Length: 293
View 1 (spheres, helix red, strand yellow):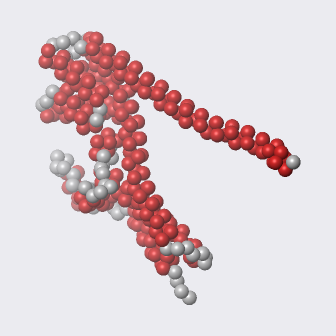
View 2 (view 1 turned 90 degrees about the vertical axis):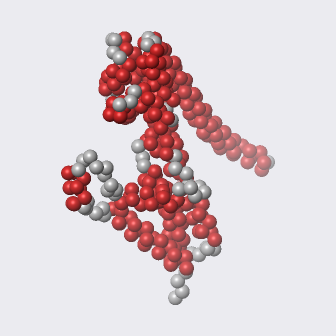
View 3 (view 1 turned 30 degrees about the vertical axis):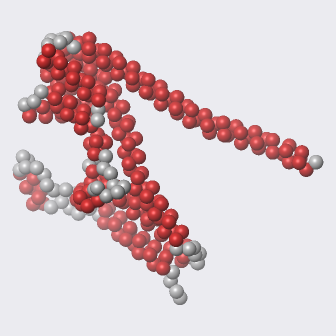
């Protein structure tokens, strides 16, 4: 009995994928000595990384710079994902794209169905390429939603800072008190930036400006610029902060209206197609009788 090469390759890939899946599910226990050392020395930077992060770091070190390998670090920093884990996800999905067609062809070969070898090879490569770029599209949409959410938080933050300044709080004090009132991940990022500024002994608006450049958040840079002018020139910024908050809310509402209009237009196309199909179905018997007469 001759065994098809496709069956052998598919079985090997299926076995390898199953082994990797079992290994990923069965996580090892953390090393006791390393855990105690990190607990007893909290000031030292932790060097222990889990297996996924180590594999991801290896992929970043060896694949970065190759054609088709891009790491959107700004978007990753915004959503709180490491480059290593992002690249590991891309590699795992691409491997799955290579594996699935081979397994299907191997199953067909076992039951006696055969096909030319180039067919599963081409399908595997196309599927792997599509899955390789899928995380980039998902990350882009996630980062877009995160920036929109952050913009809404900054609009509220501007109002809070304006109220603090109206209560005779200093620029730095107004920024910190307003940030401590808010909740959500956006305010947590602002609180962390202000805490870093306090620890590093730098101006809080400089830390906010650095965060805006790091995460590509122009709305946060506006807050930093307004408060910097307030500290250096002694300008009264209550009206400026309220005006910027109002204009930002107007921009966000306009963007949401545009997205709603696009969604409505996208929903109109399936409805029109369904109408045409129903009309064709209703008119089909009449057309057939007319042609047969």
